[in-house]
Length: 320
Image (cartoon, rainbow, N blue to C red; front, side):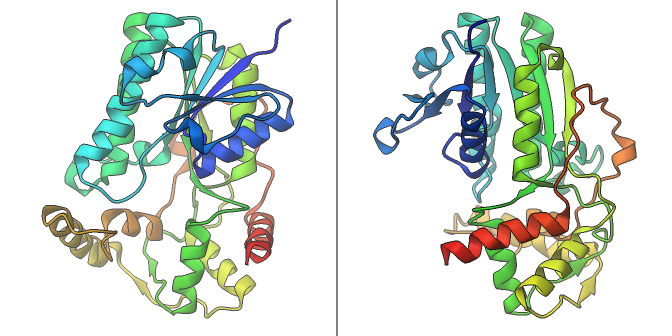
């Protein structure tokens, strides 16, 4: 039996680069889509192909002969809605259309987000642009499945942390050291965190099993501990003051919405000091029982919050 060719978008990002390394360790043949071919080098079983999900005509060489496409590319920074819509929505539609056109046998794995599951049916203006755009991308993929037979698998990824994290944990440590990390109501339990290696293992099992087609998977740890526990544990492990100030989410969310909207309206550079997504992270939770997605791959997250933080902090210390 020939080796599967696994295509990965977003291969230079945190999730993508870790997924490439994980699949490489399993001996997989990997093809990565990158916008700048000169910035990367091929290695054993890993080749890089230049292309852009916003330019469909550049995707041909990436998609041809793929067995599985892991679509991990996404915009997560601070930008106007139009940027989110183009990258996370239209970019997903482009790659789905090209798969149907050139390689309909290819299985397509869409990395969605638990933010999609938590979208509001009422008061949608409260939702983050990230959640709205990831939902839009998912809808495009589902339409391609329903209309054209795209072999779709959806993964609802939780909040990712782990070794070599250069953004999430370092930012939390910085705010803990400054005594500026607060607790918001809602974050007392059921934090949908996921350690990076556990999520990569889920992607691997999906890629290796055709029975994952037309299924959805929850890429989260089901520990009952909340994001408040995560912050407190991180403070203890780094010798920083414990976050003590707890506020109602509504008190923070309203000014966050105002500040974020003004920031975008004035096209100010960088990230706003307060935004919808910050409020969501500080209060995030997920009622696991409400979303019952049958896991037929025998995948269980193995890395606890305590062990995951130890691993991540060791890597941060090595970098320093």
